[in-house]
Image (cartoon, rainbow, N blue to C red; front, side, top):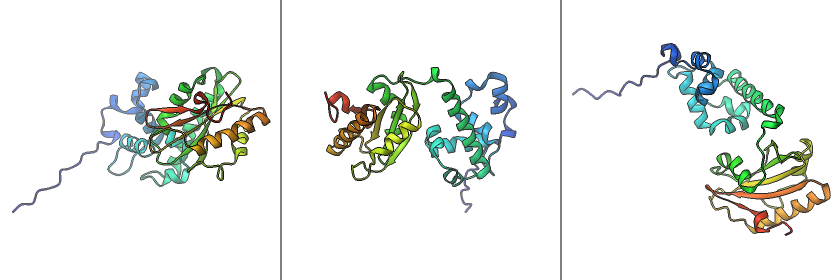
Length: 238
């Protein structure tokens, strides 16, 4: 009896694609803004691996690292652990993302503004609401509430024995930030603040008064929802 054969998986390489479908040619013809993120990343990577086109590889990396923010946070070592990515490709990815970051930094009028808890939530929700561990990040702001950076300061359960308040303010002072908002996620999806969250917030707010750096809020991010401790008067003086 003839055994059933596995279906042949056809993965077209870039050279096998019609010229008008190739990412580089499409960019030249219609402009970069029309291309998908995967197509742009494919141009940076230049070539794929055996049996995998560079476009398919780009799509895989975006899924594996949770899109551009994840690629930006990944180290060279973490990138090189991905199939088909050596040090050269990892360096090219990091260089391209750093150019983008510097472009934003050089055009302050184009930086997003954060004036409300909703603004803070929408800025970070896509990156933070599905994380499997707690991450504490800062939204560093200038005097006009424009975002300077959103660095990750801690990964892991938040408690007063782990968090060194000075680390938060060191990041703010390094960027010459006038104010910041604390943000952390609850992997459970429930953004209800814990007593520890409130206690940490109180300590940070008090330190901000001493160091003359405004702590505007602490938001806890869950699944598609959040809680502002400032709005609830938790850890902040009313």
